[in-house]
Structure formats: structure tokens, C-alpha cells
Amino acid sequence: MIAELVIFIILGIVAVSSAFAVILSKNPVYAVLFLVINFFALAMLYLVLSAQFVAFIQILVYAGAIMVLFLFVVMLLNLTGAIESLQDKLPAQRWLAPALGMVLLVEIAVVFLSGFFAQVPEASELPEGFGTSAPVGMLLFSRYVLPFEVTSAVLLIAMVGSIVLAKRRP
Amino acid sequence: MPEIVIFLLIKLVMTIVIFALWMTMVPFMIWLERKVIADIQIRIGPNRVGPFGLLQPIADALKLIMKEDITPAKADKLIYPIAPALLMVPALLAIAVIPIGGMVTIGERSFTLQIMGEYRGPNGFFVPELDAGILLSLALSSLGVYGVVLAGWSSANKYSLLGGMRSSAQMLSYELPLGVALVGPLLLASSLRLNEVVNAQSNFGIWFIIPQFVGFIIFLMSGTAEVNRAPFDLPEAEQELIGGYHTEYSSFRFAMFFMAEYLNMVTISALAVTFFLGGYRLFTDIVWLQPIWFALKLMLFLYLFVWIRGTWPRVRYDQLMALGWKVSLPLALINLAITAIVLAYVPKRAVLVLTITSIVLITIAYYGSSYNLRRSTEIAARSVMPAGIYRNQRKRGFNQV
Image (cartoon, rainbow over all chains, first blue to last red; front, side, top):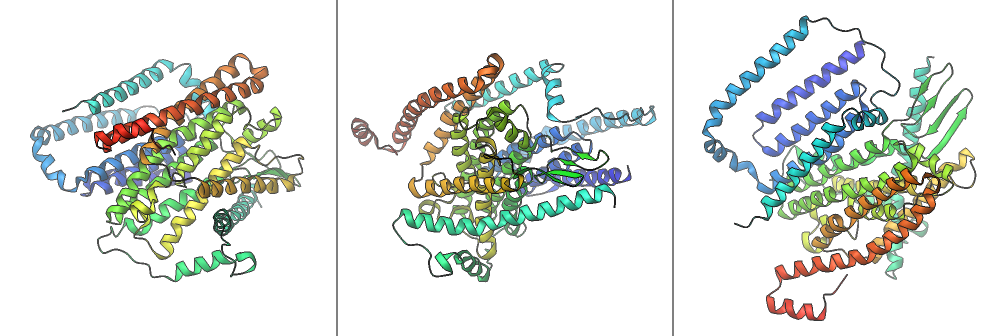
């Protein structure tokens, strides 16, 4: 139990500090790389929670595919000089962002505090094969089949939309 | 001594042995490649250092290490030195899930010759095989692209950057067909564990290359593209990009790029052996022979990679993308759908039906893809050629690779 706690704390520190580094680094390429580190820390946290399938998918999809695309776009656009000009284009964001951030912070605090004083359920033994691919697949295609299909439809719409936008001639 | 310590010791020894074997493949591959390419080009190849030039890779390595390690003045000081390692570490880690032999029993303990494999000790001590082994190896192979992209970016050289760009686009495009092509064998084995895939092939009594021939072809093609080998070596096309993403690198960091390329090639070959050629099983079930069978089949694939490099010209960039998105991916998806339907409706005769459908599919795909690639050549030609030359060329028919 103690070992698990130590691993959890180390991973938590890595995840939170890399998340801060994402928003604080001046170089967009560094920001993307810190986000990759953050995703890795999250994947390790899933492993600690014995959800190995989710952990591998996290690395495969987010760290391996999506972040490479991010990196690709950041390098292609060479954003280093573009950040200052971007700040002036969105004046409303300067006021809206802190306000919305505060709302989110309050919400997190409420959830955290209400959970803090609630009765913690007794940890039960995990069922055989918990977190492996077979039970996750069974759940996805039986109990959660509607959200699963809706997600795929949303992705399809996004794909069609991006093609329509890219094909439009000025 | 508690059982867990023995377990960890056995795994440690196994890891070191397999790791050492894998690393020995690199000098061997350098020698094989130089010799075979020389043979194809009617040259003699290395024959001065050691018998048959066998010590040539050591001389090559020494030459590289002795060179000065240069960092360009404008290079990114943090990322430039670690980029080669980012490419090499995932290549090395991917060996952890590949089974090179079956169940070995020593006294009360038995385990498979696979780093993340099954282990049974006395008193019911049991560690199962890693559940989604293939997902781990695919995830690691998708991480290799960071090394290439960051090496290109951090060198502060436009040719390097172009090479990095090309490779990220290429590896992303071919990751999809690579993964989908493997789903067919996984469906037949009905498991994500590599050891189960090997066992399923001996249960069916047939290697999956026969019923999953389409998957095999797509895997081979996307695997070659994934490791940036000829004819898909556009990220380092010498005539266009000097050296591509590793233009600025020298000394041992440059050597690491080469080691990573060879290691990736060995890993892709090992996956191909496991999924399509029956893994470590051949004829008998004598356990100590199995790693040898595995090595022999691996050599077959490594030779094939060198052979392909020696015979095929590099594809053009638009052909590469057309082949990935318009041919490989649809074909892999059709193959997956057919496999799933056959397994659902005629599971008893699945192998026979799948063999017939894969022959039909590959025939259609051959003619379909040649039409498809001709179309993309025409489109590319229209966008770069003056109208008159284009019309003329079209009348004569475009030269096809």
C-alpha cells in the first residue's frame, strides 16, 4: 500500500508540474513536449489503478498519434513569433479566461470537499481480469454502446467538417 | 528466498540475454546489408576486415565513435542531444512483448521465453502474460516518430526539418494500416496476447500468412514505411534532402540513428514472424530448438528487407501518400470486415473461406491500386507540368514505377 502511495505521489507531481510547464513555456514545441510527458504520467496513473488497457490506449492514441500531429502543426506554422500577435486578437479572452477559471476552481473545490467528508467505501477485491481488454470491450459494446457509437459519429462529423473546410477555395 | 525475488531474478536474466541477442543483430544486419547489396549490384562488398568481412561492422562502429561530436551553433541545446535516444529507446523496449520461445520448465517453475510472459512458481505463484501485448508494441513504435521529428526540428537546418516533416506525415499515415492489418490474425486467435497468437496458429494447423495474405502484404508494406526503409525512405532521401533528419548529426549520435533503424527493422520482422509465420513453432515442440526456429524465420524477413532495398527505386511523395491512404487503409479495412464476417458465420471453415477471399481480394486490389496510383500520378503531373507538356505526356501514357 505504501509503495503504491509513493508511486502515486511521484506521478502526481510529474503530471501537475508538466501541466504547469505546458502553459508556462514560451516555446510552443516545448509546450507540446511537456503535454506528452503529462500524458505519460496519466498513463502510468492508469496502470497504478490496474487499468492497463486504458493506459496503453492513452499512450497509443494521445501520446503516439495526436501529439505528433500537434507537433507537426506547431513546426509547420513556426508559431514562435505568432504568440504576441495572437494575444491582441482576442481581447475578451483576457477577462473571460480568469473568470471561467475561477468558476472551474470553485466547482473542483465543491466536489473535492463534498467527497472529503463523505464515507469512503471499503476497497473490495478486484474481479478476475479487471482492466484487461476483454471486459473493457464487453462493457463498451453492451452497456455503453450508445455513447460509444455517438462518439464515433462525432469524430466522423469532425472529419467531414475538416475536409469541407480544407476543400473550400478562397 | 521469497518467490517474488526468484521471479524478478529470472526475468532480469531473461531480459539481459534477449537484449544482448537483439543488440548483436545490429552489427550482423550491417554486414548482411552491405554484403547482399554488393551482391545485387555485382560488387564484392566488404572483404578486408576479418573472414568474409565479418568484422567490418566493428571497424565501422569504431570509425563513427572516434569522430568528433558536433552540435550546430543554432541547434536546440536541450533536444538536439537526446533526439537519437528518443528514437532508439522505444525500438529497444518493443522487444519485451515478443515471444521467442515456448514454455520452459525448470523444477517447480515454468515460464515462457518472453520478457513480459507467463510465469508459474510453486504454491500457486502465477504471473499472467501482459494482456494487451500488441498494443504496447504498437504504442512504442508510434513513439519512435518523436525522435525523428525532434531531430529534424532541433538541428536548425531546413533539410533536416523537411525530413522530419516527411517522416511524421509518413509514419502517421502508415500506422493505421499497420495496426488494422494485425487485427485479422488477432481475430483468428481471439486474443491480444502474442503467445496466444502463436499457439492459435499451431491449433489451426496453418500459418496465418495463408488465410490473412492481404493482411500480411499490408503489414509488410506499412512496416517498411514505418521504419523508413527503402523504397519508403523519403525522410532521408539523399538526392533531395542531403541526409534528411540526421544531416547535422555526427559521431555516436549518428550511429544511434542507424542502430535504431536496424532495431526497428528487427522488431517489425519479429512481429511479422509472430503474427504470420507461426512464431517460434516449427515441426517439433522441443523447447530448446524454438528460439533457433524463431531466429531462422527472423533472418528470412531481414533478408527480405535488404532484398527489397536493393531492388526497388524510391517511391515519389504523392505515390507514398496515395499508397497509404487510398490503397493500404481501405484494403486493410475490407480485409478486417471479411475476416469478422467469416468468423461470425462460418467459423468451422474459416481458414478455407478466408484463403479464397484473400486470393480474390489481392487480385482485385492489384488492378484497382494500379488504376488508383495512375490517377494520382496524373493529378500530380497536372499540378506541376505546363499544360502542353501534360497533354503530350498523357497521350503517351505516364511512366509508371
